[in-house]
Length: 405
Image (cartoon, rainbow, N blue to C red; front, side):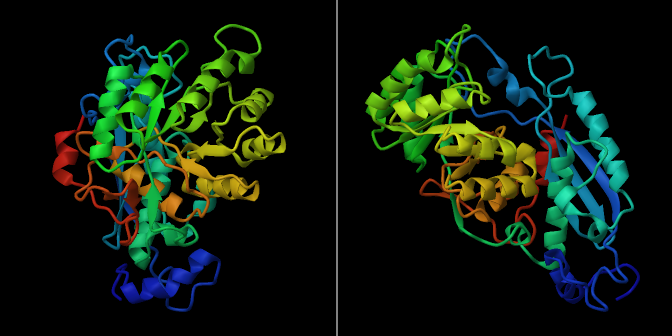
């Protein structure tokens, strides 16, 4: 090998180091460092397809406007010629006045630039991806994903192999919509059925006509299983939250097409969750971000299912899924309705988690473009896990320019 060039043979010899083994003499990482030479940041805004989010009858809210929030695409270039790609969560436009904890666009970009500067000049093989310590935690997941992608490409391994192995080649997914009235919910149900999906995740806020909407789905597509995410919307007023929600849960039970009820109460109200779990036929799902939250929920039998995205961290999702598995609970991978890079990373996470058997939020196909040269493949309500090296996907550079901010 000459200079800093990295041969495929050398990288494959060094692959065992990712599993905790010592690098053999002469392997990549002894003389070649796979150094990060440049980190490019590209901001994009990719609209949603029409008719996916809220019905027009609802007052515009954060859910209506979230596609306007820019995302940052990370291109992590190395001296070996390998480029790793990543994607941040969405930010909010600098002129927006949304009630949310999401950062402003300029704040997110400045934070990402700090991470990019920190990584420049470092070797990928020196980074500890189990706890990637970067100056800004809010954009860390995009750089973590880019590092996994680059390392996987170097070794010729798909990311799911770096995460522990392939537990499933296809991941169950559902279709998604925002807050919809009955006529729009029926239209959505017919559309998702024509596309081959078998489940629908819907959003609902306090006071929405969600019972009528779910009943409309049952009439339009009886085979479709429905998840309703209430975003911890009850109670509306001070009082016993479980009792306020119980009639709604019972009405959904009676329709007979429910997959699960997600976060009807504030997620810290584990006793309220337990009451609903005991009194409703429909399984209750709790959204958890840490292993401790899952353990606490399991101790009191608060729910039967767990939704987790672990703040976008590939490693932390694996920890959460394993913790839920120890408690006998299946999980699904949540999302913020991402583009193709994050969706691909989430698919590798799901592929490596044997108990990720509930329909996950892999939704980039609902944007007007996923930014992938070849979109994620869907078949029979499953997303096919990419099998190429790294994330197994490539950016569409023309689309990257087209949707640039």
